[in-house]
Length: 88
Image 1 (cartoon, helix red, strand yellow):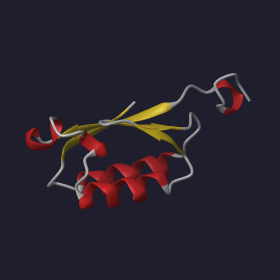
Image 2 (cartoon, rainbow, N blue to C red):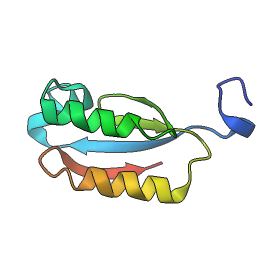
Image 3 (tube, rainbow, N blue to C red):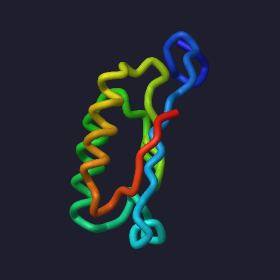
Image 4 (cartoon, rainbow, N blue to C red):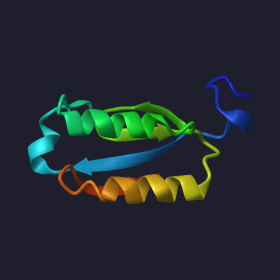
């Protein structure tokens, strides 16, 4: 395990969430809206999630591509909140 806690020194990966304009100024994924709180609970239930920022979901460096696809599709279905999703 590397110094930053990732296995084999693999750098963390990220999902970038581009929010709709009306949510971008609100605290993003930390908004107090009940729908956003539920979304956060679902996201942190994935063991590969390291932490969440207002518009970024940090993942373990060795995350399986199927998990990323599942999370990306789930986020894209949240059209009331999300404009687009990118993976780095």
